[in-house]
Amino acid sequence: MYRVILIAVPGAGKSTILKRVSENVENLSIVNFGDVMFEEARKVGIRSRDDMRKLMDSESYIMLQEKAAEKIGGINGRVIVDTHAAVKTPKGYYPGLPPNVTQRIRPRAIIFLEFRPEDILARRLKDNVAGIRKREGETIEEIEEHQRVSIAYAIASSTYSSSYFVKLSFRYPEAYPFQHVDDAASKLIHYLSSLEEEHKAHSPETIR
Image (cartoon, rainbow, N blue to C red; front, top):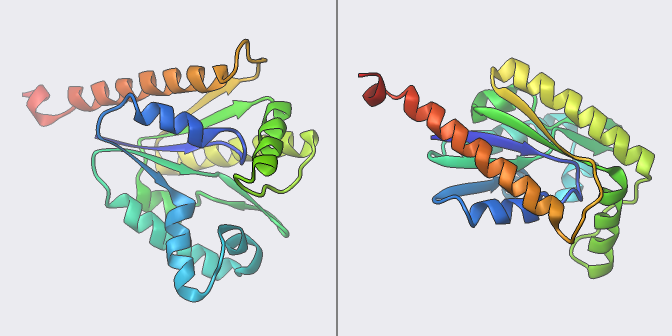
């Protein structure tokens, strides 16, 4: 019914938001692009997701992206693809959604979640302390840059995939714990509902 790509920089809280969305949208498939890539990378000896961007050459990385995109493009129904638009590597930013990937995924929309960099930094530090995931240290300025680059990449991906681009911004302090999660989930659920209504309006049964 729809295939949507959801983007945010690492540590933005995307996984928690998606969990909330999945609890409120029936038959929703949430697919993590990095996890699908890692399934393929393990076959060639890569031991962690972070090693994919640190150790693999660009040609091998592109091949993994394409294999993952092919698998995801074959999933039908209500689908959200959890991924990143700009992958930060030792050599610079690398596109997470180049044309060869979006052509295979065929998204209806690309959604970017934007937050205050200080909130993202706080979430990353919390993850590190809790041992949830070891995240690399970045300054507030570097996180802000990563968001700007990601938005530019996401808009480019939207252009050459002929899909909607939506930016949902949560650049305000939380009035209570997990307010950003509540607000983001609510907006995403509303938007997904609008895509479903659009799909129904253009289905052959409705047109007849």
